[in-house]
Structure formats: C-alpha cells, structure tokens
Image (cartoon, rainbow, N blue to C red):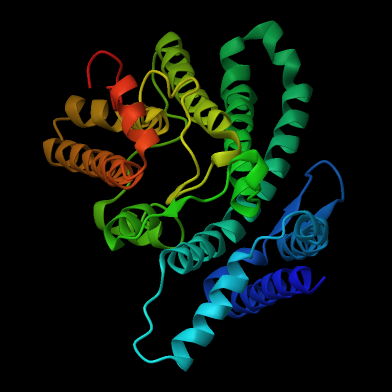
Length: 347
C-alpha cells in the first residue's frame, strides 16, 4: 500500500503541477480554450473541458495501473532525484533519473497538443461525414465535383485522425507488459531542436523564417491530373498514417520504445518522413508550375529553397534519430536488415 501511494501521489502531483502550468501559460491557454462543434446540430464543447475530462480519467486509471505495477514511477524517481540533488553535495544524476526527467518533458510537451489536435480532428471528421453524405448526389453528375467538395478532405482527415489517435494514446500510456516502456530518451539538444521546430508554438517561427509554399489540397487545371496527384497525396499520407499503426504501442517522438519491423518499416527505416515530404512537394507543385509559366524565377527559387529546407529538417530528424536508436543493439541489427533509409532500392 505504501509503495502504491508513493507512486500514485507523486504522479498526481506532477499532473496537477502540469495542469496549472498549462492554464497559466498563454500559448497553452489559448490552445485549450478553443470550441469544437458539430455544425449540423447545437452541440458545442470547449477544448478545456475535454482536457480536464481526460486528466480526470487518467487519474482514475492510474489506480489499477499502480496496483498492478509496483516499480517506481518516473515522477517518484524525479522527486527523489530533486531531494538528493539539494541534500547532497556534487550529486550526479544517474541514467534512470535522466530518462525519467526527459520522458516527463516529452509527455508534458506533446500530450496537451495531441489531445487538442485529435479532439479537433474527431469533430472535423464527423462534420465531413455529414457533408459527404448530403452531397452523395453529386456523384451522379460529377465525381470531380464530389472529390473537390467533400471526398478528399474526408479521407485526409480520417487518415490524420488515425495517426494522431495512436500518438496521443501512447504518449500518455506506458505499460511494461506491452513492451512500450521508454528504454531511452534522446539526450542531445540538437535532436530536440530539429523535432520541436516542427510543432507548435515553434513551427510558426520556423515558417516565418523559411516560409511555407505547400498546400494540403493543391489545384491543377486538368481534372484528371488534379485527381491523380491529389490521390497521390492521400496515398502518401495513408502510408504516413500506416507507419503510426505499425508503431502501435510504441508511437512517440524523441524516445526509444523498442524496435518495430512491420510494414512499412520492413522496406525503409523512415517511411513517415519520406511520405510526408512527398505530399508536401506535390502540394507545392502548382506554385512551382505557375512560377515557371509566368517566368517568376525568383519566386520559383524561393519555393524550391523553402521546400528543400523543410525536407532537410526531416532528413536531420532521421539522422539524429538513428544516432540515438543505434545505441540499441536491436536497432543496429534492424539497420542491417533494412538498409534503405527512405526509398527502397535507391536511398
């Protein structure tokens, strides 16, 4: 009982401190006070209520979890580390304490963002399902019109919902029997830097420096080309989401939570990074074509540099990720089995 209380109460303390930080931090507060609605009804819900509900459920579920799993919680390890740090001279943090601190930082940064992202995505999918059903009659006249109006966005939001749901759940849950326990957390500043600049609030600053010239749903003059290339975006994003499904219980940034070898990871080591970049480059094609057609070579250069820099950021993420994972012998074996980083038989 004593062991349970230490684990449970230390974790609750961290959760409550995190909650007070979120509601008193301007960025997170603005993020948490959004409203989501079902457009064809009067149902509206505040994102802060969703966040509070998930915290409440999480606190309840921790009771059976800590009854079953009696090993020290990461919050308890950190509290002991803090006590030792201030009570002993020249105290050196050990590896277990370092992993616990970094793991909590990862969860505290990503969890609230992912909870709100997935909540917004659920409502977006529900609304798109409604509009798609209403507009099915368009199929009798023109698949192109139906594709333009509803179909593309419905499929894209469904794909992204799957990806976000997996990451959101497994950022919050770490269960040893499921082999998704965090084995290590990236310790270097550089990898944290190249990851965090891709997420709010830092990605807005990144975009202001290197700009953003892609679009989720690019428009092309020829109907067949328009449908084909946007289907390519959907296919790329499906593979991107499928990679998250393959990660399953181990989905999370900046951590090693055991090695995954399932499709598409059995062909390339970074399927999510390459497919996301393929979608971005297709999304940037209209402005590239327009720049060439109108002889706007300065604009063309800016677009190519911008997209190339975003691609390079994800290349750096892949390289630094591999450097961290290569500390694990299982990943070294995996690299020998899957020799291509991004494109099978090429690179």
